[in-house]
Length: 126
Length: 157
Image (tube, rainbow over all chains, first blue to last red; front, top):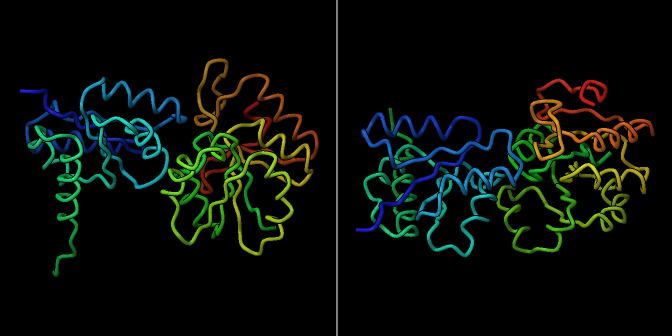
């Protein structure tokens, strides 16, 4: 069996670490996600952090916003690399689904996570 | 004045630019001055992704920006110009005499630079360039977001 996918949460400030902790608290899985913050980074420094977090393994990058430095750095790393896929708009629901489906190819895992995250966005009637 | 902010930020177009400054200033066009990005449609597409459709993005080389500054300043819409390094904005300032103030918004750590503020790292040469620009009458301050107080040049160089 191949190595499970790695999830890298890429965010502004401490969002990534907070999401990692939340997933570990809810699921007990604490080795699936790596947080990366863009704090204090120019594009080169953020690329270095991402490269270290991916560590040459198949990965899905979960980015907080659909634009900006976190996304641009992530897409540059994923470009031409079938082992790395990118999802934007990270939320807790998509990460909870991802940690239990890390045996998929990165692109499939990314699509699945995006669907799970999208299903979690609702406006409940009180 | 239609260019409301001349900003140095090595992340170019990102959240602080589009949301932090763009919302309160009601920015309707962003000029990204960077020779490498100007030459790469793929990079331009990347930077476009973070910008809402109501804001136009103009990609310009340094020489194109010099030629088009008067046009942008006549534009009735509010604009924001961002360059990734001090030398680019210094070139625009020196050759056009049209840049009244410079916002140092994000210059991050690299070899040869020392920390000046949380979001500003400068080499001695870069600090000297900013002082030279200020000596020509350009107001140079550091300010990452509009809700923060602008930091006078003398306090970070």
